[in-house]
Length: 398
Picture (cartoon, rainbow, N blue to C red):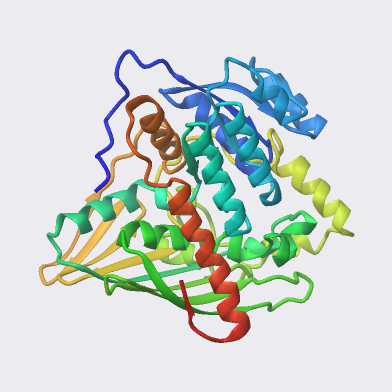
């Protein structure tokens, strides 16, 4: 079992100096998370888009560069958060390892198992920490569910059920995000959240899976919905469903608390209607960079959420109880009724801050990370197997 996480780093440990590579949606959000983290400092950024660099420079004293190597060459950078497009993950991780930097790379880790292996080998060769995130398996309520399962109080974990219906497919996209061969669609962008979470909860090796996928809108020619059955070696099994077509919204089942933990209102079809106003792919791409990149009008909010994050509905069925995430904790359903185990809000942004906690624990305290390269490789293997299973309409053995 993984060593429990220390409440804080030893007093003598200096803050980890972290640079951000890529100031799009994910990188932009992590800038504020790093700034607010008690055990880290923002050491710089790298971003090819000049407008995003200018916004970053206006808000931060840390340097910003047009290329990753200028950031990696700095001695005052201990680690980097790589939030570049999927196709660059392998090269950027290997380059960071060669410069002796610890690494967090956004999911998916890579688009092939060979690339995953190269990244793991580079981190081992240069003796740096490699963590893959963010996925919702970092969410505090998921960690509490894992602890409750591990305690044995509710018996063995037997079944997991997850469902998430969102507007994902109609959010502004780069062209490659609509090309499955280049990591587009939900199988490499959204379903990994679900796979990571059930693998994190089971702590068992995935034995096989059977999946079906769909492309329901030819205007978005990549997988937009999926159902998958996963069979684990310890006898636990899981069923996961995801749809990104902006119709039904599972936040309705979560009291209209959104994925990030913010209260929201129903807006069925609104994202689709907004997307249909784009005249061409170039206009859509420009909107993604300018509106969702660092400092943009629709960039991820830096304010602290009031509820816990989640990724749709997740139910863990043990021998004696069912566990489900609630907006503020974990609900336990048993023969005695239902009770809620609250998960207190911590400083920072839940889930995203926990990624940095895991990095700091590894580098400063020597705690082996749960979401290391080997773990993330398993999720990539599952994503590729889902695609194969759907195409060949058969069970795939892993």
